[in-house]
Length: 237
Length: 293
Image 1 (cartoon, rainbow over the protein chains, first blue to last red):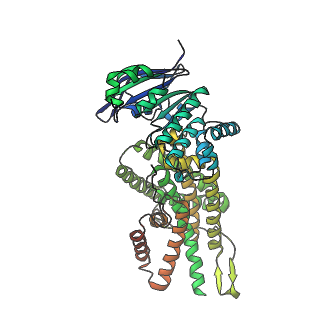
Image 2 (spheres, helix red, strand yellow):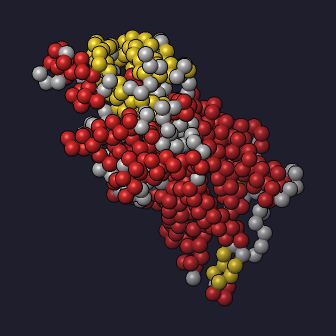
């Protein structure tokens, strides 16, 4: 049994009176790709934002590599080795590509970041071509690459990706998933939130299905791909 | 030649507005709030400089530095006590609080320094410069004000563009959540913004009172409102916009006074603002941000 890296236990998150996340618990082991799939509004993004500290759960805990992150300020979480690529990319559109990457390494010493920039440019040669360009002028796919590159700049142990395929043409979706596989090969553990269940389950070691704020089913990627209920609900047949 | 004289005094007055407008625009850009107490920080800065010069007998430079230190602390304290608890509150609540802080500062000044007008001592010595055989004179105060404004503009632009904190400020102004994911301390960044804005307000207070030496507890409010106007005029949130808006506003005001009517000059200034906003609602250099999907 491999080491548990992230242990999320009994999260309950509210937006005002709306109970968005109802007792969600799951785990990610070191070296895995784990996916959270589910329909729009199932609570996938809310779960990731709670792990990153942007939202607060009323109960439970978030344990990352043995440390409880539950009460850690959101800006201190990234230095624990946990980075998030947010939904909708959220790159800094008025800053250059390279400045965006620098922001990704905000908590690291300036002398350490040259290597990381080189690594990101190696993964995403497109970004290197556009390094001086303002991020707002990039295409959607390039912005997604930038958002991923920016998150990698913190040298995360665990990378959380929120809907990386959203709004992208199929060929770009393939490319993004190739990159996810590459990063995984390089030793990054991945927690992937996706609406594109087919793609997500085919790369994932394990998956959790979120339905209206709770975890409905769990299993390996293969099992879920073959699960009838999952097929009907998320895989179109 | 009188035209040139008016133009120079317009640029000089506009430089003061511009320095004040920087405080409004930076705070708006980063904290997304209108700090209507900003004008009163100017007044506090002027009083501090006045006290240091008149009561302690120290040099103008020391007085400016003292005013900057006090105002920086004041700005940070105001933000911590009055605005930070309202970070997630409705913007109307924050606006009303800012107006409350403004009255609080004015009344505190009234309590400490009384209502009698103080005559601000001369800060800038020297005769100034004569051009065209004495036809156009630039006073030493006007010259200092314009130069100070240029230096501040350049320094601030470099700071925002090059330094780590400056970049963090830009990141926070665009997306607080994403900035936090990067590890940027949003509250700390907002404090720095208030500190810089308030330090600039202290400089503006001294420059303003050097040109118009009547100092009283309400000294900051009208220039504050005009500088806010200048910030909106130039495009609120934009640093070059605040500079441009401030200087144009100063020129318009002086020209209106010189060529149209002294009584109506403020009305004309605000009328120009209304016209600009009707034609270009984002202000002169304001950007409409388009999101790309």
